Image (tube, rainbow, N blue to C red; front, top):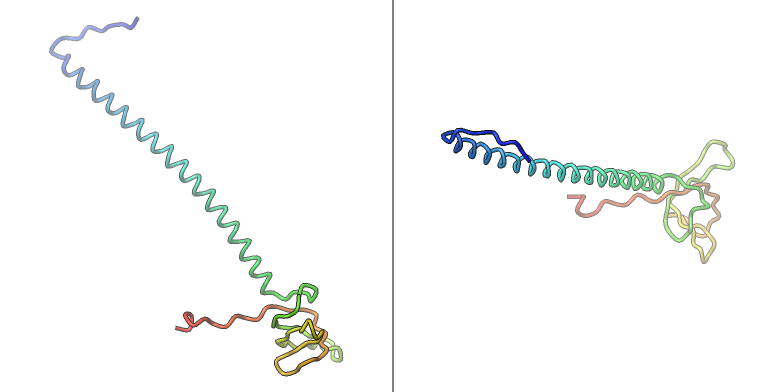
Length: 137
C-alpha cells in the first residue's frame, strides 16, 4: 500500500488543483509526443518517397541522354527519319551528318535530297523535335 502524507485541510484545495494541472500537463505531453512520433514517421516516409523519386528522375534523365546521343547502327530499326553520322571513306577523319531514313521495303536509304542510295552510316541519333505551338509563344 502507498504511503499517505497528511495534508492540512486549507492546502487540500490547492493540492487538488495542482494535481489536476499535472494530469492536464501529462495529457498535453503525451499528445505532443504522439504528434512528434507521427510527424517523424511522416517525414521518414516523405524522405523515402523523395529518394525514390530522385532515383527515378536520375534514371529518366540518363535514358533521355542515352536516347539523344549517337547510337550504333545496330540499334536502328529503320522506317524513321534520324540524323546519320557518315564517315568519309576517302578522306580519313572527315564525315558528314545528314537526315536520313532507311526504307525497309526498298532496302535503300533516303535523305532529304537523294532517294534510293547506298549509305554506310556508322551511327544515328533521333531528330530534334520542332518547337510546339505553345513554346513558340
